[in-house]
Image (cartoon, rainbow, N blue to C red; front, side, top):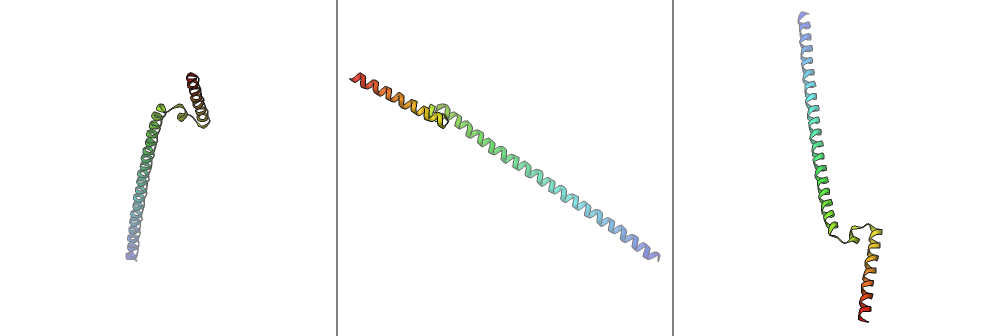
Length: 103
């Protein structure tokens, strides 16, 4: 009878040890998962920064180009149409001045 009690106690001790080991393993897996998520977040942020840096670079190039561009290229669509009309009017005025000078 005592042997059976001792055996039962040993089994309970072993079962608790196995349970502690399983708990440690789950904790390691959770930590590994958290580390992977942190790494993934860092990679996404890095990629986002890279994309936004490229967008800023494109914007800088666009800004430099628009500084050198004529008025009608810099403008929005309605402004562009008005600028083109003004340019045509200027060209017509220059052309009519030439015709008057030659006449």
